[in-house]
Length: 200
Image (cartoon, rainbow, N blue to C red; front, side, top):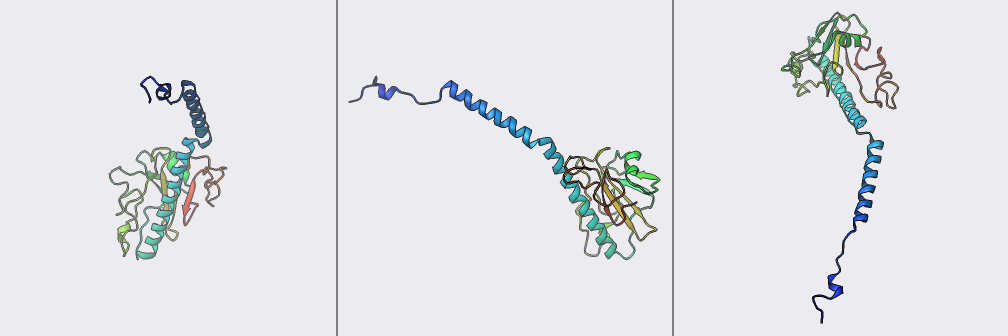
């Protein structure tokens, strides 16, 4: 017969304070190692750069489709640098392009992603017979005076165009492990360039 004071029933099981402190210390060390190894700031930059690569490829494809489908296409004014950010500066906007860009056209926030020709790229994608391939014109994930998309065309030479973006991660920037800026075949080794004429 067991009694209330029986020592077998009164033993409590659990962790000691020392054991809990050891577990917390081990978790803290693992967390520090993870942060140092993974470098979350670089991971976020790489994610934004991946979005930039996707956006520029999407824009290039949409403009190429527009040129093939529309009988009298218009890609905007020659010798103009179009920027996706309202704060696109002259030095960075047209400085990206190697041609004779004489002015910078920025857009308003309200119309920056429009696909009817009033967006930051002045192409009316709605004119495509099967409808626009874009829901909206993509803009840079940060879209400020440092990170933005720029666009130029030369209407006198077979409606050629160029779209540029600045990479921010060490992986995709010039001399990075997956460098797209200096290996894209363009004339500027510090920005990623796509299009039909990379010397605009």
